[in-house]
Every structure is written in structure tokens, then in C-alpha cells.
Length: 219
Image 1 (cartoon, rainbow, N blue to C red):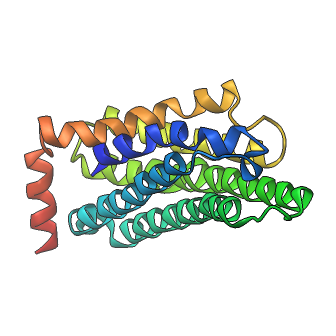
Image 2 (cartoon, rainbow, N blue to C red; image 1 turned 120 degrees about the vertical axis):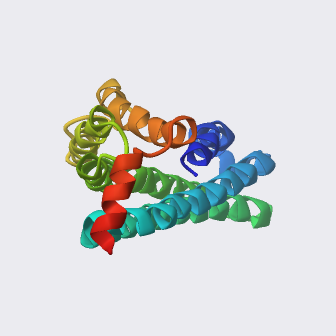
């Protein structure tokens, strides 16, 4: 599930480029198929995101049921932000397709720019903030305490989570720019933390002694 989130999330930007980088997209010919395919990838991303939470819940509730519920909730909230972002760009596509020859160009441009700005804020507050709380702090702590994966690996989440939160707040308050080098650097530990969460269980599996301990404590 974690690997699917990478496969779906990374290419999405390139499919959205026509609408994100062209303020006049809503008035032009439009690359609607590209935008629609990007939306499809993000729908798969939502499914995979929720899947990561659902799969981990029965395992990590043995460690701390309250915190794993917090992780599930954070994952769902992240998906809500993503869904709102998808709807904002699909609305731009619909308005472009249905705008007649006599449509007010200025109003359309303002509406299109507003919807693209909404999409950018959903990226900041969902993947750019909520992820730091859920995937970073909560899941990092649970994996560190349970020792299901190597603890140095879990430390990446404990470091990456706060960095994403701080960078997100920095953008929100205007301290740093969205998409800046500083924000990119802040995402590196979290990037590798989530990537390893996708690779490690496939290659090595969870620590057998940690699994046995959790099963014993749950009895």
C-alpha cells in the first residue's frame, strides 16, 4: 500500500501541470485528459492511503489503541484534503468545457485561479501538514515503541514529522514560500521513512520477536 502511494502521488504533478501552470487554462483548449488522469491517480492514492491505516490498525492497536486510532483519523483527514483538491481541479475542467463563447472571461479567470489556489492549499494542509502528524509523529512513535521495524528507521518518522509540520506552518505564516528549497529539504526524512515502510516489510518483514511480544500482551 505504501509503495502504491509513491507510484500514484509522484507522477500526479506532471499530469496537473497544464492547469496549475497556465492561469488561462480555463479559457484555452485545455489538456483535460491529462488533468482527469491525474485525478484518477489521486483517487487510487486515497484508496492506498486508507489501506495503509486499515492494514496497520489490527497490528498496532496492541501497542496503543488510542494512538493508532489517531493515525487512522489523520490518514482519513489527509485523504479529505486530497479529495477537495481533486474536486477543485475537476471543476476547472468542467467550467472550461461548459463555458460558452459569450462567457465573461474575467470572471472565468478569477474562478479558475481561485480553484487552483484552493488546490495548492489542500496540498499544504493535507500532505504538507497532516502527514507530519499521522505518518511522522504518531506512526513513527508507534513503530519505535513496538520495534516492529528497526528503531533507527522509525527515528526518520520522528524527525520527518516535526519538520513537515514546521515547514507547513512556515508556509502558512509566510515565513517560507510554498515549494521552496527549505520546504523540499524538510520533506526528505519523511520521504525516506514512508519509502522504507513500503520496502522493509516486503524484504525483511516485521521483527518476529516484536510481533510475538505484541501478541502475548494482547492476550
